[in-house]
Length: 295
Ligand code: GUN
Image (cartoon, rainbow, N blue to C red; front, side, top):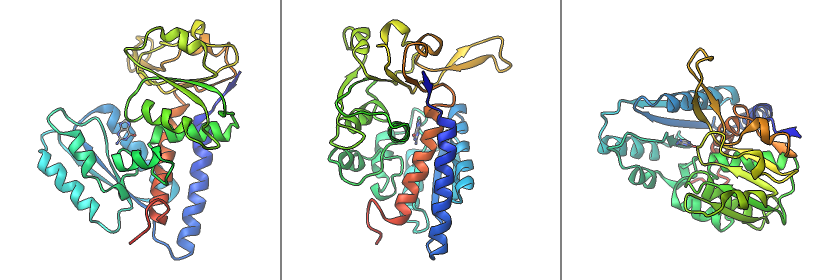
């Protein structure tokens, strides 16, 4: 069994991005600029956005953090989006999710200019991705694609099972792996809350991707010998032995499953660190006009 070390791979990729940024600036290009909008006081979102801003510094990007309280109105958020859409220095921006309950997430996502949607959540980018056109790929699926590519894991002709059909992980992942492409050409099954016999589907998987947000859901009896297991879950589990009172477990029972598979991603240190790389890569693509031509 081999560990897919997301932390190390993310470090390597960030180093590569930093080199590209230096070269871009040396050729007279602008410094890539990512803006992040953080609303409310969700502790996980604060950590994620903090990591995004820190990563910008590490790769030589400019970053802007726009932070507002949870009493902000929909109109005020829409104004921020409009301002960022029209700021020529901003190459891309994200509005961190989830938003406080009174805000309309769909309206906000749709208002983001697809040319600056480095999260890849806008239907225009999802549509382009589905048709194999240049697009910003959503962070988590893009990170997983990078892992598969860099670890030279064959996907062509393989049976892939994905647990979870969310808009930001399961559904785009299923589209990417079934596309006609080098990392793709797989036969994909997307399992969800109404799927009958999830364990039966999982046992057939050459590549199993778990993104359902249930701690230790995937156990050894659900995994084929030699399968590749990608764990997207980050679940808080009460643990009085830890100073903070909890630990972070994936959707996969690592101890059991790791004995049976060929590759596995740990939690933490697996998929998580890769998602920030995806955002950096999308921002660099935007700055270079690689997805949409610059005006
Ligand atoms: N919340 C969880 N993941 C993400 C992400 O990739 N982007 C944004 N904007 N919010 C998230």
